[in-house]
Length: 361
Image 1 (cartoon, rainbow, N blue to C red):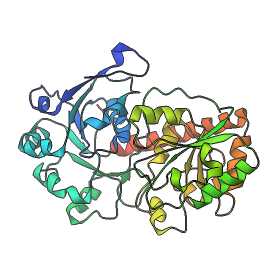
Image 2: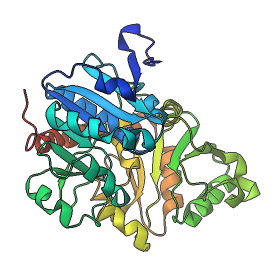
Image 3: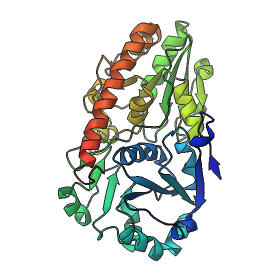
Image 4: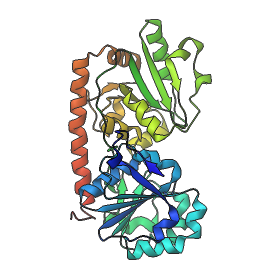
């Protein structure tokens, strides 16, 4: 199987190999393995790959076959190999072989998602004992005694600037064409379980009443925020696209103008997104240079301000969405430029943090 880059350049195609081939290949010196044991979080893989390539390493990637299109925008693929599994049973049946090559052949292994309920897998792969393992925590609060020593060794990475661990934010997706503001404003939003969308719906109703022309693309794994929740008067403003492939996701983001991150400071669940974990949507903001529409209570945590995004409070989401629709192309471009500056700052900080563990070659 071949993943063809969206540029249609044949030289930029990645060959996808089955999992078992990982045990029958030559692993060069200075190679890092990125291992994602889940069917999700593959949007992080291009970013981590980019960091390691920029440091001079070869990169092998082991992921579920559902994630392969996450790599479709990459241009720098010369030192990348991609191996896929179809289910976790394949990993468990071959864990001894995988543990052996991790310990003896790879310079480092990045566990791209460290989950509370998969510790038995990490133990089988000996990841908690070898000296070349690095753990990405998407939720840091449950990190227990097994991981304490890795904090001191800078081997616990987080997506946000959280008090524990070090921040390495994977916001690179590949060769992206940065486009200006659409004539018809388009918002992008990811549906998340347990989130309150009432304020958004009321704001959309007001905008519709004033005859503004716009739409909202809704993606995500959770269908809690679906067409059944939308009043009939504004249904045509919403485009629901659930469980899309990464190539489709990237196209929807690129076709949008703004990314709405509807975090609520009055929600105990949402407060975690500035204390113990980071919103995945922020990587899309940084990587695709799409200004965020976000509650001001969360903006500082994500280094967003009124120069690179649009900030609202508990009472004025409607006004801010209206402002975003009326924003002219010149001011929109200025926001994008400021986001690009921020993305470069975060990249520099992240790669310096990586070098606390992994030296540049």
